[in-house]
Image (cartoon, each protein chain N blue to C red):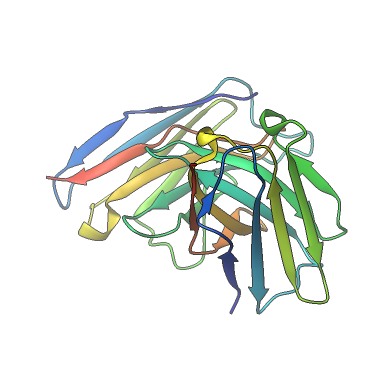
Length: 115
Length: 112
């Protein structure tokens, strides 16, 4: 069974970097696409970006040059780094596999940006 | 960016009745290969979002046939026939045809 699990700090200070890990079991990240999605307080959902089976990436332009998604295929993990965070980045962050849709999701990690 | 406009914002439905959610796109979601990358997700309280429908009308594995997706071009609909208690939550449409990928604003389904 495909399982994803996010990990990382739940509290980040403004202007610092947010770093999250998505650990995948039951399926290789060298296949398909692997994304980061966040849900803000309220209902708004935002696709942040993805890393493909080949390691290529695509990012939401709204995040400009602040975002980076990388991977470690030996550990079957992929990572999110978001730089220069503000309180507007407070959200629950999810990693997910994209096949014909985001068919497997992690449980999500709530990240608060606050001093 | 493609804007997906979902209506209604919230929906209160009696158990056993039908619910219908509309998703209108600011651009056609038909890709150059003829496929339409329009999906529907449900986020139940306290859970991660789950895929219901992909490619406009294809139910994901394990999704009951009460969930029916339809539409084309810029207009899409999710119908839930015979609403059950476990259907409550927030429904989102999502498009992966155009970069950046975008979600609709969500429709909250409540049970009367």
